[in-house]
Image (spheres, rainbow, N blue to C red):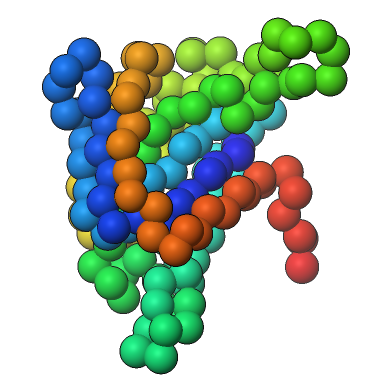
Length: 152
C-alpha cells in the first residue's frame, strides 16, 4: 500500500457536484492498493497514519498526533500512486490492484480508521472522478509505502 498524507486545516471531496466527504483539521489520505497488499500492510499503515506526530504543540514543534488535535481523516482511493513511468509518456498502472482486490481492502481501511480514531472516516467514492479540495497546513506532506517499511 502506498499513501500520501497531508496535514490540512480543511479538505473535501466532490463527486458530480455533491460533497461526499469533508473534514476540518486532519489528514486527507490518498491510498493506493497493489495486488500484493495484505491485511498486515493495512494494519501497519493505519496505525502509522493515526499515530503520526506532525501537528504543532504549544511550542510549535510537531509533537501531536491526530487524536491530540481532534483531527479527522478523508480517505481517497488513488490507484495512480502505482504509476510506472519508466517507458514512454503514458503511465502504466499494472501494479495497482484490480477492484475485486482493492475495494474490500479500501472498505476495511475505512473501518480500521473509524476504530482507531473513534470517528467516522470521510471518504470519496471508489473509482469515481473526484475533485479534491484542501488547504495544506505547513505545508506538511508525507509519502508512505508499506513495502519500504523497516522491519525493526
